[in-house]
Image (cartoon, rainbow, N blue to C red; front, side, top):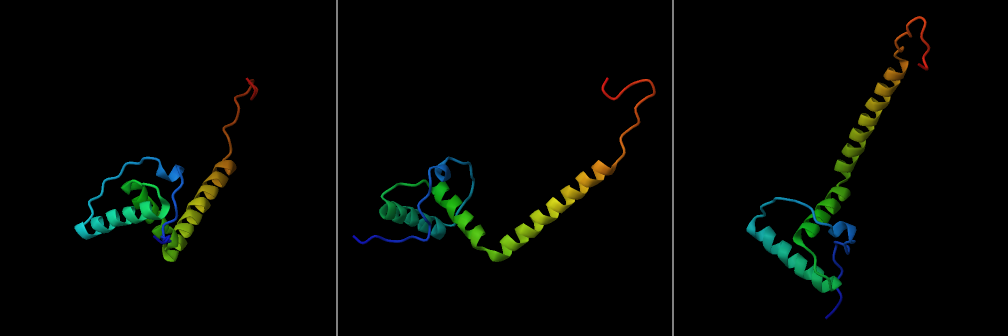
Length: 106
């Protein structure tokens, strides 16, 4: 039997940790998923759960979608900018004056 190279790399132990999901796959996709799991077992001599394969495939797909990655970076950048502006505004807001006769350390 020849060694095969799958697009999905071998998953690490951390990636194989259980997770919760609920999805209904159409019959042909389910059939292909189960066949892919069999191919994974043959390629790596290691069994893998469907949820780990699904998570890895989705992760790989999202990571390879350049438009999504660009959108995500822009969104994260906008969120970071808003947070910096908020912190800057809070830092510039004068604090309430200390009542006469008391010190700030009391």
